[in-house]
Image 1 (cartoon, rainbow, N blue to C red):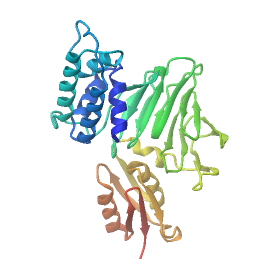
Image 2: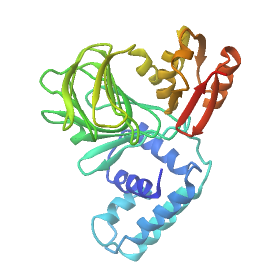
Image 3: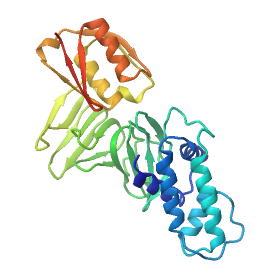
Image 4: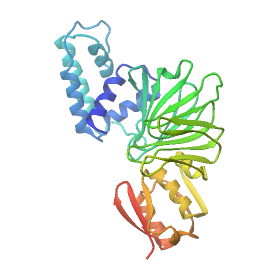
Length: 325
């Protein structure tokens, strides 16, 4: 996460009133050593921007309460000193708590909505206020408008999410992205909206309506996927094995004599990478059996190479080439 993102998250979280699970997760994230320098710098900027005003009676020593108190108007020097002491201490106490598999369970108020996020190289799951469930893939964010209250249940996704939406025919659930909107009443589907990756929506159960400024309005049926072309100018509708695009939300993936081309589709979402084949024809007929749990992408590719003779070249952290000698 960048310092800007960290700062925005801390500032917005200070204004929220969240369940204990989210509060606890936020504290663990703050105390984790990952991005410690960026957190220190962001907290210093927050403190520096706090002015002076009388200290409210009964104010606790919780650092996020103090930010919220100081943010609304001027505070006096005593309050600024307490904020600085508590926040810098919170950011600097590395390893005071352990995060759960590196996952951020964040809740943050941004305008009138809550933000949920997952860490890089991790996945996280949440139960939303309307009892819907969402799994966020690596480095993803989900913004909830007005706590999902009102006539529409509206969220905004950056990254990738798998949704199991609680059915409510009177209150449609809308997932908005930069390029397309997905409207549902109650169903299971996945949406991919990573920057610099093709956008897509894949339906596992029920039906969804996909629309957008340059997107042909489409009603998806189970096993259908609408995806953006490589040039970003056209969209294609195709039949797919939905489990290839939703399996990443589980704790493991098991393949039993499955075509390598199908396995690769699942791995792209599991590891948040993109594969390319040197020749599609060369890989036809290759089937593998394997289970994926917590292995790194390098460890998994080494195993695939050992059992299949398929070689790989990591072009960059997000792109991998598969080839056969």
